[in-house]
Amino acid sequence: FEFRGSIKDSDVTRLRAAFVEDPHIHETEAEALLRLNRSCPIQGPSWNGFLVDAIADYLLNHSGPEGYITAEKSRWLIGRLASDGWIANRTEFDLLVAILGRARWFPLSLATFALEQVAGAVIHGFGPLRLGQGPLQAPGAVPGTIGESEVALLRVILGAFGGDSALPLTRPEIEILIGVNKAVAGRAGSSAWADLFAKAVANVVLAEHGYAVPPRSVALRPGAAM
Image 1 (cartoon, rainbow, N blue to C red):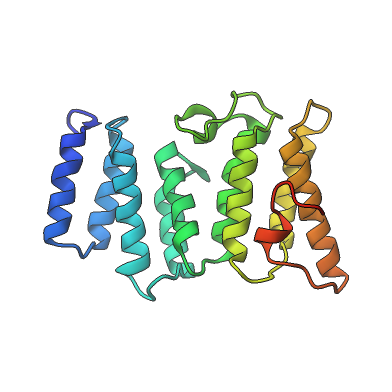
Image 2 (cartoon, rainbow, N blue to C red):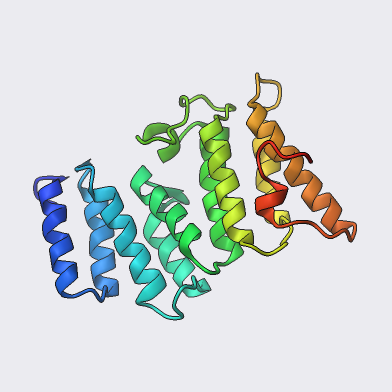
């Protein structure tokens, strides 16, 4: 694969068959798959889903405790995905978001890492969300703009960290959102972003003044009354 710089759907079919024969994914295999993703910019449509499932399976099912992303696992994942603090391509970003959605628990540092990837796209206009492909592609590499797809990603990441509990937004999370809001201030803004930011600030203020707050899935739900 690496020699020709591409991964075909037929290659993915063979890889899937190999993992069916030996479903236990080891760290060396997970690292090899991530290296393939970096070294093969031409990728068949089936590669994204295969990589996401394989790495998520390794982290959540084959390295204990099952279903949890420990601080050690988080450091391993960030170390494999980040180049100077930024994720290299859209497939790896999709992998990160999928893991957050599937994990029973993960540390705040992994949540803020994911939020910073979206914030980087909005504030600086670069990163996989602005240059990659996919249904959540941002509207253009223009710093200081935010699209509904990026708002949706922020909501997904914030919701994943809170889970079903009534955990209020944390200081590190709201500080990232404040940075995004400063970057988009004065432009023709997204109504979806205005809705999310207002609800996020209200959530923090209420919690810090001792009020009980609803689960994030309720507190940050689009279209719901504040």
